[in-house]
Image (tube, rainbow, N blue to C red; front, side, top):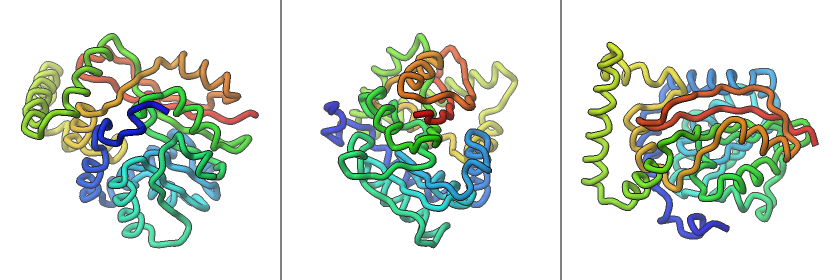
Length: 272
């Protein structure tokens, strides 16, 4: 198992960021999260199915899956704070008995006797495990024959090497250093928007239209997202093909990578 998985303090503390974000969850953000799932997986493919959310974070997408009609949801995360936050989100917005939360790594799903699911979902998580390919294999092993594996991973760019260095530095820096890096990044990003004739304030106000997220929480997440790996779409489809999965849909985000990279989204069907 990768060293980063053996020592929780080697990870960026995603759980703290998600706990803060969860305070901003409202009906509008939930609606956008539902639209994101429908876009990638399809409403009919979700209704009545079992759903495994790997790296549940705030619990927003576990909640969205329940609201779209999943029969049951299991949310797992390696960060105890994220598990606590997910549980709080679901208790508040989906008070039922058809969901559960567990503090578990993707690499321990089989040994922990986690069952196989109709849909396995992991958005922007597996590239932070320290062993992205191993994590993909472990996650895919929990998909039933004919089931779906919906995953989003960072697009590989020429700037991935420098960003990996920045993320390691940011993760192990005191808060005042992180705040300074955030201010510089946001100022540069605002300058980039200005060159496009856009204003940062307007961009931030409409940011949740993508997946219900928050710009400032995502900036913190991006700058500190360590461990960090990335992958090209053709590398992804080739790897999943060897595991017996065929691509059913994808949404790709090509970019230079100077200000970071977005997540390419994929949905595969298990043909084994």
